[in-house]
Length: 86
Image (cartoon, rainbow, N blue to C red):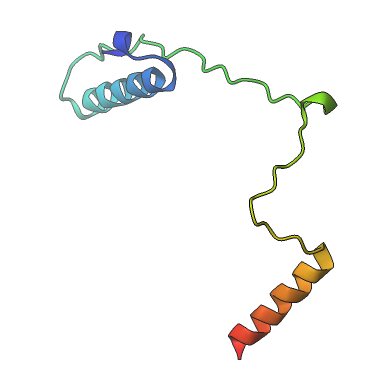
C-alpha cells in the first residue's frame, strides 16, 4: 500500500498503519506488531527564502479597483461602519 503512495500521503498512511498495529498489540488483538520496524522516513520541507528585488513585481490592480488614497478609504469605512451601527 505505501509503495504506491508518495510524499505526505505515504507518510500519513505509514503513521496510521503503525498506530493501528501498536494499538492492536497493546489491547492483545495481535501477539506481535508487524509494523514495529517500518519507518515513515524524514519529511523534508523546503526552505523559505526571501524574494530578490528583481523577483518582486508590482501588485496588479483589479479592474475598477478603488483609486482613493488610504486616508480616504479609512474615512469611507468609518462612515459606512457608523451607518451600519445606527
